[in-house]
Length: 314
Image (cartoon, rainbow, N blue to C red; front, top):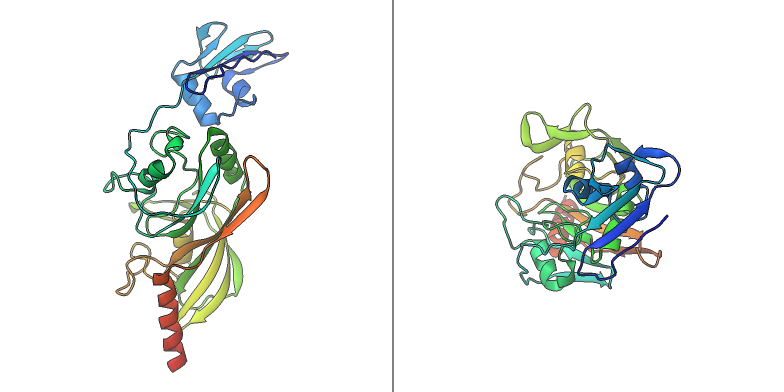
């Protein structure tokens, strides 16, 4: 199979691929090549006319047959239109491929309605200018998210190869994501698996809910401590649905402390009690298994101290 790639990093990359024996759809043929591109990226390139089949623009559904020439042109990354904005970030680890940060509560990961700037992405563009265009213009470098009011560990890709590799690890469920959460009440069991599908709440599209026919969602938990009518849990995600932990626990009747969306807001804490304290994955370039841990931030540790004091006085 012939493959020519333009060497310059700041110019389009061109792949010329000669189809071997057999016949299959163009999109499936490209997905089976080692091009360093995700299926969604390939789909977008096909739709934008960057893929030619025997010299002509083609659709993803067209058949590629023995001897056909497929030419793929990958444009140079487009700079993000978002502005770098310096803000203090706790960097846990950083090298040429990725950065692991300990995100504070109250910081949105990327721009959206109500927060057009001053997001984690803006801060990352100031910290790591090279992530411009990595994985897309709107969410450069981002391979997974944390809710605005969830604190803790996040990994961010600094190269296209790292973005592809880390995204694949998440898809294949090879990334360890552990959380600490304080929930209302006492759990019926000291440990267990919550297996309940999650989707948009049909009664309120701004929320998620356990919905029959929703996307599969599984959360493992164990009780770490019980405190004056509350339970401190350690949880590990087997899937990564939006608001998964919050929805699963609220559905069981144990909403998070301070969760004004799925439970009740707190007068003493202006966020929900959920912290991503454990992150493990395979380093995209070395293949080494790495893991990181984060202590509870002061405002969450204070809640536990106050509940412990109240329990001791009873």
